[in-house]
Amino acid sequence: MATLADPAHPRTPRRVAFSRAARLNHERADRAAASLVATLSIYQDGLSRGARYKAQYELNEVQRLYSLRQGIRRCRQGGRRCESALCAVCSTARASQNRRSLLDSLTTAQHGTVLLWTPTIAEAPGESLRSHWSALVQVFQTTTAGGWLKRRGVSGTARAIEVEHTAAGWHPHGHLLICFPKRLSRDAAREFALTLRDRWIVKAAELDRHASPQGQHIALIGASDLHRAARYVTKSRIRANASDTPSALWSSVRDGDADALSLVHELEAGSFRRRAWTTTGTCRPVLDLDDLLASGAS
Image: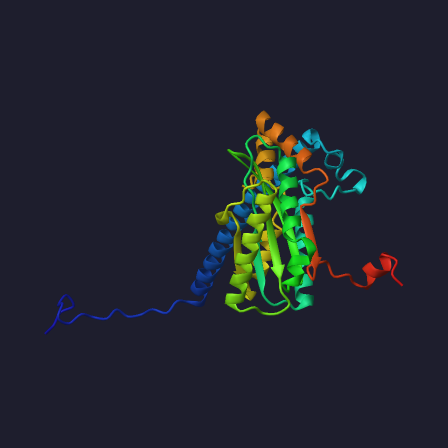
């Protein structure tokens, strides 16, 4: 006869059903654990957001003290905003508005092929930001003079100028969305891109500026990447601890870097009354009825 200790005839333990009270206790414990995890997550998110808000607030105050521009120093006084692209308060709203306007225009115009072009010219040693910016715009105007883009079927453009500061000095460069009303074949798009690149290099040389073929990046934007491209060309804003040059310089000023303050003042002076955002054709903002009435249209 087999005994209970016989491994050849193991005995299956009898299952005892949990009582209703025990099940309720387990459910309460599970809900309490889930609530604790959610609370800790919210607390950590709050700490992270609090640190970001504090850093941004400090950046706003630093600009109020040290900016050369009176509009930035007085921004938000009396409920007024300066609307400057270099203002830590206004630049985010400005960039978001440009992005929404651009996407609305592209949706309304029913565009076809879209290209993203980054035009650049080489910086000259010791050249000021204002001089380099002027040269960049001059090469662009010369390249597109006489309706060159329109004659090749371009229906609209959106151009942003971004400023970087490297070991070689100031380096402003463009980001340009080029829109066609119809879909181009890949070969036709490539032919246009190469023609545009070569024309840019020639026109830069005519103005005694060097433009490297490797620096003129032109990419074909797919329909699924259009929002990402629009966000890319409208990315300019001043944020605490961001990596772009204006944000990084102001963050360094907040941390007490006097050399960064000198560069910030060069940036503000060099970009004064310079247009960093320009749209043409089908990329221009779409006016609604209220805008037309406000502009005095009958």
